[in-house]
Image 1 (tube, rainbow, N blue to C red):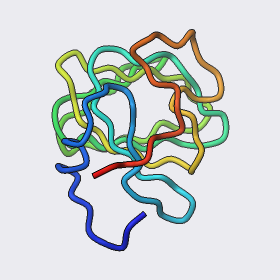
Image 2 (tube, helix red, strand yellow):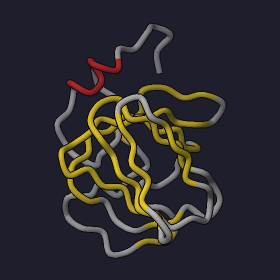
Image 3 (tube, rainbow, N blue to C red):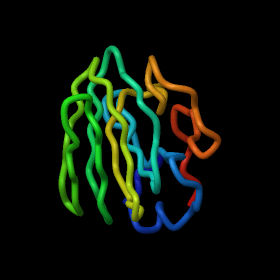
Image 4 (tube, helix red, strand yellow):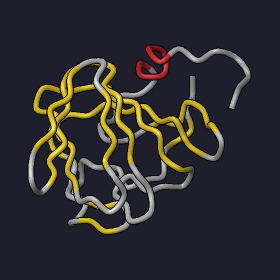
Length: 127
């Protein structure tokens, strides 16, 4: 990580892959990740941690088993630990997430991982 400011616009411009988050910084053993998303992710659950989403641009839907949460630019939502969820964005979005370092993007329990989803703990940002 760097001690210099990081432009989120530059971070997002540095990669094209969808559902493949980049780690922009760390805070108290949490990764701050940005990702470009479009289409569907997969149903998954993080057993021991909440998952925080901030929509930087576009629209994001987070399906829960009992409802779907609609998020727009500037909106935040936290999926509580142990809650099965499926993010999606038909038109595409840029998102920021806070997750404990080492948290897999596909959670601890999940459906089969489709080819368009990067099952990772986040990639190092290269500006």
